[in-house]
Image 1: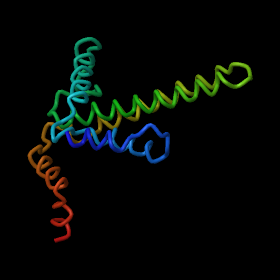
Image 2: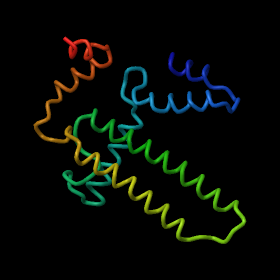
Image 3: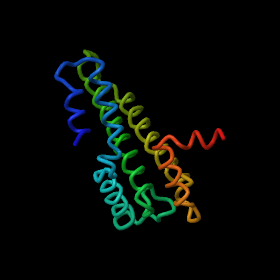
Image 4: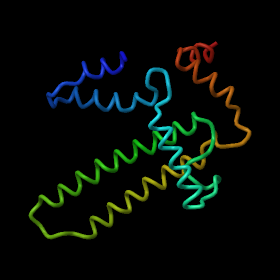
Length: 161
């Protein structure tokens, strides 16, 4: 509840650079809400996994989404949401700029935009497929302990000692 009140206090209707920075900061911070995983990101990953495995019949080894633990699904859903948001923003800006200018329609620029979008999704897919957390022998207990230590600020102290 405090994060929601803090978000409302930080944002106002003035379109200033500080407000834009606060919006971006709050977007990336909401991977966890009230010390609970963001259910939207987990639902996005779960729905993506169902679509990938049941409709498209892509194996778990080569698919973007995995049936793994919730931490992995949370990261996959959050990264997909962020990339989709960025591509939507970039595509909208590019399309509006190209439509507002008084020059002939250029299809090669739209082809370049499509190739750029596909490269972004390929990069996202490669990052997910090559993620070390997808290996069957990955030690999730050690990873969870490290994440808890990082949240408390203990990991750097232990590493220096």
